[in-house]
Image (cartoon, rainbow, N blue to C red; front, side, top):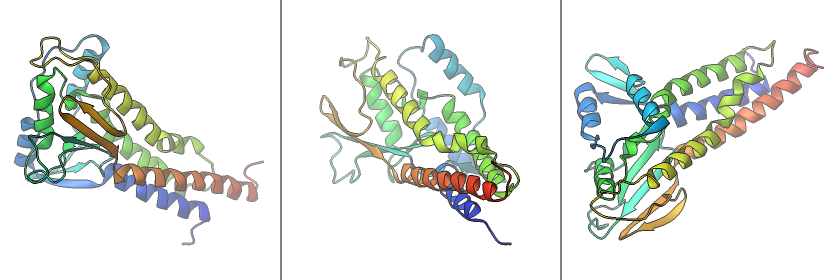
Length: 257
């Protein structure tokens, strides 16, 4: 079957999109369950207002996982962003990458090999009155996988249906990297400005830096995009080329004026 140029662009874009947001990871079911339980840190104080409602809704949504016998397949994709925390008590000789947390479409995940750095960072945050990273974007982290799967299927429909433009199918995949930045920025700001006043260590409210190096007390953070975000931007380029190429193809076929 001969593929049109827009189909080639679209399939390349869909492939990058899949790897960035849906590339699966296989866990032993018991290990995955214990891992999720171990990552939970008791909240320092109760959430309020609409954030509490969103968090409650997030707990009612099932994780996007596929059980297979005694294992679970988790379509979590590549890391989109990296949060690295450094402090004197975590020397690089023992922690060569610092305390590393990767942000995926389904929320934060431990990025260290021999220690649960996500749990460690959440514990540190507990002492300054900051919420657990897992409370951030409670709904999007649950529905993100479902949305990514729907968008991936939408891209395939856009690529293989020749008779219609179906441009609306590529809108969400195109804006996904920008939506991620907005949501990630909002929640990092929110957790930095909603500190528990009864925390063990008092620090002023602050916005955790999105990109670059930030410092709070003796802790420094190094935040930057991960390779998954790069893949998402490459997908953005190829999906855009596919859309423009399909418009030209349909005009040549007399379908569009």
